[in-house]
Image 1 (cartoon, helix red, strand yellow):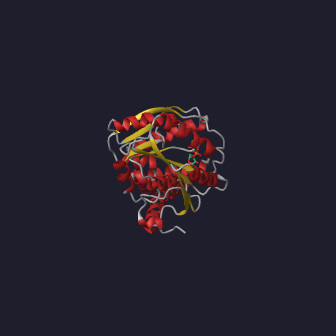
Image 2 (cartoon, protein in one colour):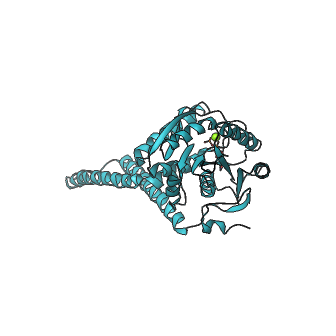
Image 3 (cartoon, protein in one colour):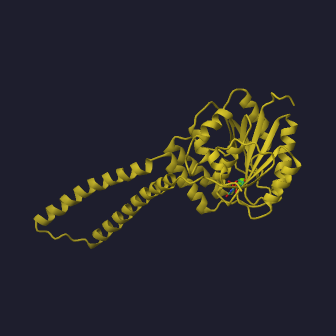
Length: 324
Ligand code: UDP
Ligand code: MG
């Protein structure tokens, strides 16, 4: 391989994938070598409790193109991806799930698009065979709502993306604590291109997403890209104000006329509706406040416990401190 061959970094987050790690690395090697690409693999172990890290270290010993980064605990997929991106040294970076749900076979095509001038190449789903009905419908609804609220197009998007060095540099300039890769990589703009992929069935293991973590992801995504919920609170407040004037006038007129205000149920209903709305409004404000709190504390977004493989990194100084 000539020195001018561009280096492709493949970043994959790993959380308790066990034997899947070997399968994944073997498959990637096959595809990338087959396509004649120079590559490095940045495997980020997101605090796995199984033998994933042992496997990563062993692979890093066997193959100089494999590098491992172990986070000090489970920081979540977004942080793991970020860690990988900051460690990647390539001219282009591909982010891919390590559970083989994202077909590595699509990478050569993504690289081709990059060579043709695209800075961000997104793999979009043409089907969701690997997901149940609820996941499918839920994903679709979330994407629609998210796109509507934030104008960041996520419909059928995946985390399987290629970023050029300039796009990556732009992405890494975002200081957000709870970064949301799909959103931030759209927000940066840059010349984009898409390739269609089939999302495969998981090979071994099971999905780490619980309803709760999906909800957190949705709330994070929305609060980091839109203040629409806050405006909504204002709007509903205005509507209530109009309603209050009308109902207040009616009540006063009745009182002056000497008619008693009957309707205990009305009072209860009003209390319930108002109470619900006030609490919801507070909740919305609270979510934003929590985000601000998180950002203001300015803690590192992940901590590295150990590395294996070749050490050259593109990591900013402040993240390296945590090393033993
Ligand atoms: N993952 C991670 N940290 C987590 C959860 C998941 O690094 O806390 C990784 C996981 O190993 C996989 C990818 O993120 O490579 C996607 O996870 P999963 O397959 O569970 O999500 P899904 O494909 O269902 O969206
Ligand atoms: Mg998966």
